[in-house]
Length: 137
Image (tube, rainbow, N blue to C red; front, side, top):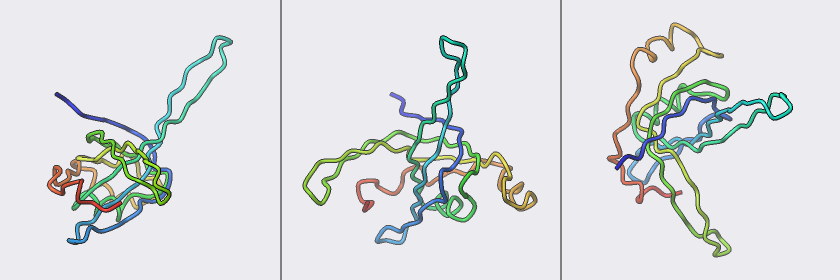
């Protein structure tokens, strides 16, 4: 079986940084992907889809330090849906991409020399060594 998501898109805002009780860094950010087509009248239509991305460990550190709103990135990971009860007892669900790899694709708003060394190879996560069930959300 395969559970893999591959996305190229832009960050909607700067990543949010948190830590697990054992000190593992986590970043969350939203990534926008666009789809364009022409409708039956020949007019251009664009739809934006938002994806919630979660990173852990070393990948989270790099995302927290170098990613900013508007940055174009490549993300590869697995799709995960989780549930929880809100403060009113209502069961809620969210679907996220747990990133395993990330690569920055442009230098928008950053020093090109600094970034070029990061772009030489994709950044890999700890491949899920942090149990997601133990992560407090």
